[in-house]
Length: 253
Image (tube, rainbow, N blue to C red):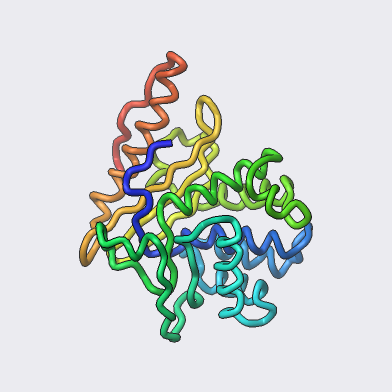
């Protein structure tokens, strides 16, 4: 594993919808009811990555209360060993979030002014997605922790939803169009992130990249950066197999 400042606290944005989905699949049996499925679709496959959809899922998780749902998702990821990921209040809430101290946001080395409402680190959210990938293969921490509530079938369905993410840029744009990529991106004014489970030339791997720029993230800088990082990792595996490498992509939006 390559880790470059992976324990830096960032705003969670839409990337923490991944643990929301995992908690939902933990709580409910398959097949999910049509209403829940509709809200998952709104959360993952809509062009706006619907916050209303995510709050509806928190409402389900919280038995009719979104704030309880947020707390339960945080407790859930803590049980899995992820100390730097939390959702203090639902999306777009008017509530003042309580101050939650984590090892990452208490580290004075870097300060990305992370959103007090929801946070994660590149390492945390990347490992969560990697755990879901292992669960889909019938192994790993998730199945060991919750053998009665989670299953390969549930994790496979969750990954299937993330593969339907319509965002074609960021990490997705750095690999061939036909590649299987399950990813969740997040946007803030000063922060962007993307975490992806990529089924590469030599097998699946996870990339988790967050960028912070004081005041405003410039898309024309952040998007090519993620494109190139993704392409370089894909090419690393091609090189190990002795295969022709992907050239830089043109016409990035």
